[in-house]
Image 1 (tube, rainbow, N blue to C red):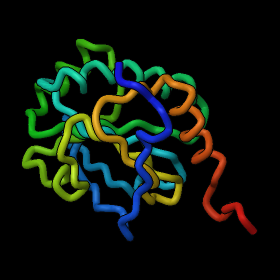
Image 2: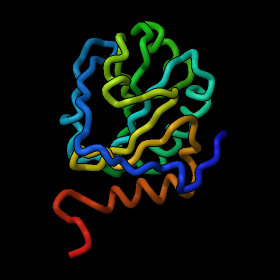
Image 3: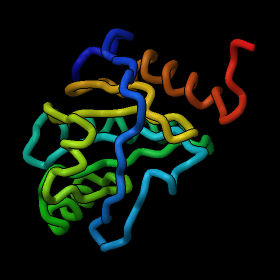
Image 4: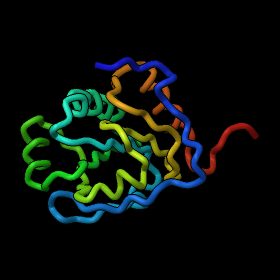
Length: 160
């Protein structure tokens, strides 16, 4: 598993969050706005990508550790079929909300150049950090950053 030091969290400097409206393998549409009020880990991946496969259990553990918190994991598949995505998640016992990016348009909009590519989005729907490549989501550093985002609720910004 890749290291998880604080420098891996790259602050988001673009003025806006890219759009994200995709279908899941069952054909239901999911939009970023549907998750308002939750901190999101959005992970771009592919079943053929070994580092992607290796980091999935760590994302599952992170979600389990944050059970009961307004936190969700969305895994955006990079260009594979619904059946392949469904089969992979079932085989690996991963109950993530999977979204299909068949033409990799979302990956381009989010400027994903390396798989896996991950983003932490705050409860207001703004991207706060990106993480390039495989990451240990079970690390203390990952927990610290996600808990910090969970503590910063909409309208409760610090620094006043």
